[in-house]
Amino acid sequence: MTTINQVHTPCKNCVFAIYNNNTQTDCHLNFIDKYKNKNTEIIEAYDEEKEFYIINGRKCLGFRQNDWFKDLDMENASIEEKITKFKEINKLNYLAVVDLQYLNLTQFENVCKQFNDLDIKPKKIIYIRHTNTDLNFSYETMKATIEKFPPGCVWRIQTIIDNDLMNEQILHSIINLNTKYRFILSIPEFTNSIQDIIKYTNQLVYEDLGSFKIIANKDKNCLIFSGIVYRFANKTTNQNILSHEEFYDII
Picture 1 (cartoon, rainbow, N blue to C red):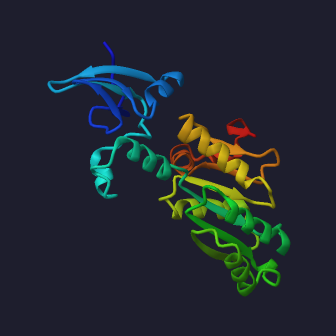
Picture 2 (picture 1 turned 180 degrees about the vertical axis):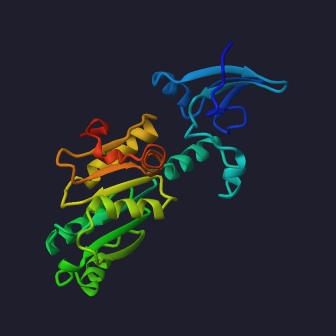
């Protein structure tokens, strides 16, 4: 007898489920086949109303009931319009943290320009400046540079008074204070890899329905990871996933 995992997704009331009469045959997003290709168990289930699939062991990224579209004033939109809107919205939700300890002003401007040029921009950017670099990174200078390359998101400047704090300690505090962002993009040193990392991660998660612990470039000065996984590992096993080499996927 098939056991339904505590974590699962029934397709029954999803607007993207394709039915022939009362029997589900497919998914408008092609997620059934994609999950099968990822070795996710797909259960054929039924109740007194319909026959439908259950994605076992996964929360489906595509599951949407019509109320979700009602909030967007698209309750009566065509399925093609709903697919287009879903793909527009269903992208990486991430917080970017830039540590300025080892950046000069030119590199800082370059990073700001990279954010401005991103196809998928962060929801928020936190720039970390240290008191021993305060002369280079005055608030007025930083504000002028950030506004020159507007990233289209919320940003803030956070000053660290204790210069003995390591980047990992600062990042740990930020992750625990900013829990509404699914992913964290960390930039501890200068990098030109922001666009490549974001494009790769978005493709992996939202197109290929894959999973990962940490994605980084070869120099590890640009990395992205799940804030939920980070906090869970820290709380349950007191481990910092960023300290484990085996968790890194290098691109």
